[in-house]
Image: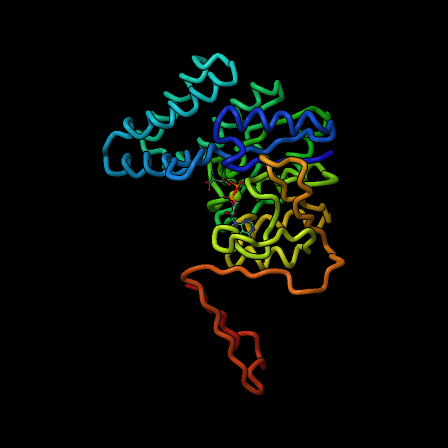
Length: 313
Ligand code: ADP
Ligand code: ASP
Ligand code: MG
C-alpha cells in the first residue's frame, strides 16, 4: 500500500481537494491520506495555520479571537460547500475550537485544529475513516516520537481500510495535544508510512519534485530525479524547505522510498528518494538566512568529541 501526504496548497480549496480525490482514485494502493491544513490559494492569501497562531496570540492578550476566526470558519465552510457536503455539520466543531482557543487551551491546540478540520472534511468527502493522531502519535517533550506510536498506529491500520489522518500533531505522553515544528505534516506522513509498512510514501505538493535550487530564487532550476535519504536531509537541513528534515528518520530504518510529486501535475514522475542513488554528481544547492557553519581545522583538534563545536543561530 501507499501512504499519500497532501500539503497545504493541495488542500487549499475544494478545487484542489477534487484533485486529491482523483489522485487517490487513480491507484487503489493509495489507502492512507495524511492531510495538511489549507494553505495559500494564491500569493498574499492566508495559511490557515498562520491564522490559528494569530487567534491564539489574541487569546493570550485576553482579546477575542473572533474576527480572525471568522476568516478560518469562512474558508472551511466554503470548502465544505464546494465539495457538496453539509457545511452546517461543521459549525459545532468550529464553535468548540473558537471557544477552546479563547479559553486558553494554548498554542499547540490552536495550531493543530487546521489539520484536524481538514481531516474531518476530506474523510467525509472521500467516505474514508477519520483517524485522530491525538490518539495514536505520541510526541515526547524533546520532540521525538515515542515508539508506542508505531505499535498503536499499525494496529489501527491492520484491518486494511482506507483512512484519512491529519498531519502536524499528536499528543504528549500525558495526552495533551502537541504539534511538530512548522511543515511537520511531512513527519506525520513518514510516521504513517512506517506504521503501515507502506511500499511507498508519496508526498504531494505544489512543485514537481526537489529542484537543484530553490525554484522561487532560481527560475530555471531542474528537478532532481533521484536522491538518497542522506542527500535530502542535507539539502533540507540547509534550506530546501520542500521536505521537512525530520521526516526522513521514520522511514529510513524500514527503507521506504519517498516520492515527491505535484498535485497540479500528477503525471510528472517527481523525485524518488531511496537509500542509494545511481547518480554520483553534484546534486543541488540550498541556502537559508540566519544560518552559518564554522569549520575549524587544527592538528589534534579531534582528540575528544567535546572539542568540536558546530554553531547554529
Ligand atoms: P507543502 O505545503 O505541500 O508541504 P511546502 O510549501 O512546504 O509545501 O514546500 C513546497 C515549496 O518548497 C515549493 O513551493 C518551493 O517554493 C519550496 N522549495 C524550496 N526549496 C526547494 C527545492 N529545492 N525544490 C523544490 N521546492 C523548493
Ligand atoms: N500546517 C502546518 C504548517 O503550516 C504543517 C504543515 O503544513 O506541514 O506548518
Ligand atoms: Mg511542507
